[in-house]
Length: 302
Image 1 (spheres, rainbow, N blue to C red):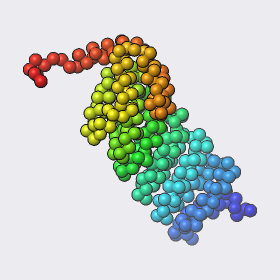
Image 2: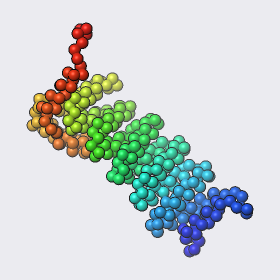
Image 3: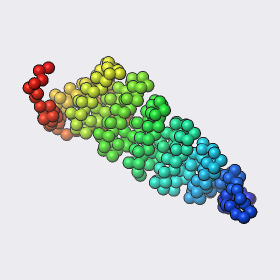
Image 4: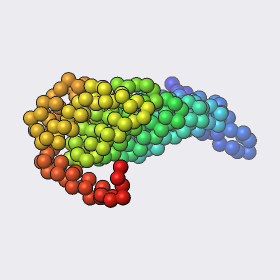
C-alpha cells in the first residue's frame, strides 16, 4: 500500500527529475507515470490542491516527452481541480494553457472546448473573463473554418453580456453569429440571430440602432432575400412598425408570437418585457438624432 501512497509517488517522481552527481539525466517517462498516479490518488482522496499540483507536474512531464496532447489532458485536469478549489483565476489560466497545448497538436476543436469549459466555470464569478474565453474559443473555430461548431459559444457569450446589461455587445455578438451562420449556409440560424439582435436593441431602448440593424441585415449581399422572406424577418418588420406606431398592444401581441417563442430563451425573456420605457419618446429621440446626423445637402439632387 505504501508504494501507492500519492505522497510517496510524488517524492519518487521528484527524485527521478532531480539531477545530482549520481543522476545526470532526468527520467521524465517514469516520473510522469508516477505524477499521474499521484494526481489520481490525491483526486480520489479529495485533496484537490495536491492533485492540481501533481497534474501540472504530469503535464510538464508529457511536454518533456513531446506529447502535447497528453500534456493538455493533464492541464485540463489541473484546471478541474482548481474549479473544485474555487480558485477562479487559476481555472481560466489553466484552461488557456490546455488550449494552447491542443493548438500545438493542430487540434482546434479540443482547443476551443477547453476555453469553453473555462468560460462556463467563470460565468458567475468572473463574467468578463468568461466572455474573453468564449470569444477566443469562437475565434479558434472561425480561423479553422469551423463556425458551425461555435454556434452555442456565440449564444453563451451573448447570454453573459445580457446578464451584465451590456446590450450593445450582446447584439454585436448575435450579428457575429449571423455572419458565421451565413458562411455555413445555416439560414434559419442566421435570420434568428438577426431578429434576436433587433430585440436586444429594442430592449435597450435604442430604436435607431434596431432599425439600422434591420436595414443592414435586409440588404446583406450574400442572402439579400433570406432575411426579408423569413419568418424572423417578417416578425422583425412587424415589431419595428408597431414601435413606430407606438402601438403597445401590438408590440405585446407580436412578442407572444410563435416566431419569438422559438428563439433562444434569454432573448424571449427580453422580448416579453417589451416595450421598455416610453415608446413614443424612443421613436422621437431616434428621429431627432437622425435629422441631426443627416443634414440636407443642397448640392445632392439624387
